[in-house]
Image (cartoon, rainbow, N blue to C red; front, side):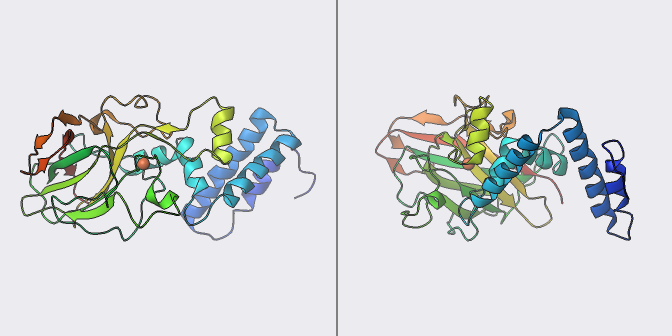
Length: 286
Ligand SMILES: [Fe+2]
């Protein structure tokens, strides 16, 4: 373990993994060291560049707190989150596709009944979302838990606003005996991911914008089925082809049907123009 050079250093580091260890840990570390050394060799990193990389990761850590997770943003914007998601959720084509989880889910969202309004009073364009949760062979799934969350019209999630009066535009529902779900919300808007930190600097340096197309987040779980973490995107959104976190899939882009004021499908009278969305989720067996 002396006189190490650029040609034998990688092997020397790998030889340190020879001890009795967890097999998976050893596999991950071996590959990580290989790829990291190969990267440094390939671009012949200068000392100043390496230090800049360390400064970048240090700043990324310093930007993290209970409300802000800059490392998830980094993973999302480098496409790693979607890659991990794709590898871990290979499903038959009949099943609802996953997409990125994102950093804005909150545990303990308020519970609602089917047909309730989840906006917590946030004004916007009323939107009635409804459909079924079924297995891929078409059987309705009763008592599936549906969590939904979305951004406010000011393009912030409630958790990004220290002045927010409480949880807004998020909730937990349960499908009825026939697998049906329904809720009132407002039409989602496209928004910029937080770009005032190191991830924003990386996007700017790459000539990329920080915008995500408008969407509603869903997480659907039921005993015996694989949990689906996904979004419904708004057809026609200008950012569908350039999502900053690479999350858009055609099967998740839905038509927000516009209606004049009047009677909604649930019989409610709406005194201004509104939208309806119909979407059926299909879950695979766990
Ligand atoms: Fe989002």
